Length: 292
Image 1: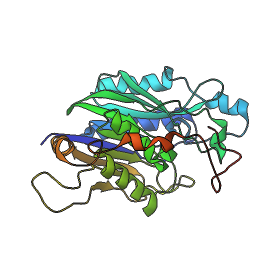
Image 2: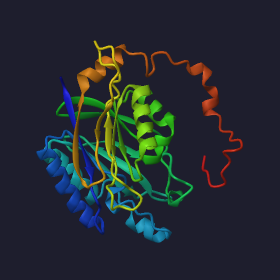
Image 3: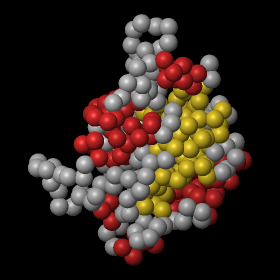
């Protein structure tokens, strides 16, 4: 059994970036004391998912991916020998991005992912969408793991997890900032099931506007090798309260399952799916604020 331990930092943010830096560093240290190999923050931790309506204020709040805030977590990852999935409002032109930076246990930034499916029907219309999904080799104490990312609303589109699976992801990190109720949790369960991969989601707790905790980890193993009955793939669902929640994924079992089961990319027929890449939008799905 080769266990990968993921700490979900389901925490309330502070009043400003300096406070979030302090709270975040303390939380990472506590996650390491708990035995974590990876610590994951909720969405846009640098400012507690705040998107000012005034562009000048928005730009002033954004942070560079190689600036002091991010560097502090990279240095701590190396000190603790623990990977860190940090989220921030990233300084970017023409407008900031909603971004995850993934540091390995040596403090190296191995993945930068900007939210591709921005919520253009709301305040995220002021942000620059990401361009692509990416997967990276993450060096952890449990060995090398192929890791991808999707952020909150990305979860609503099955293509997000599908592309990450096709790029080799074994684990998807999913920072979040919205109410996680039964239907959104069911989306995560389905994405893990159909792609035979693990998904770790970190949300803000109750007390943060429009959030309710329920961070979760699904390991994707529905039919364990050698067993006939299916099992619940949810290995962790937190409550609404603030805290650090630790879940373990058996990498050996997941990899054997992916090697032998029928889902993922085993029996797909991509030549039949051309319509999925069609840019046309027809009623009832026409929206004036949608970006393509």
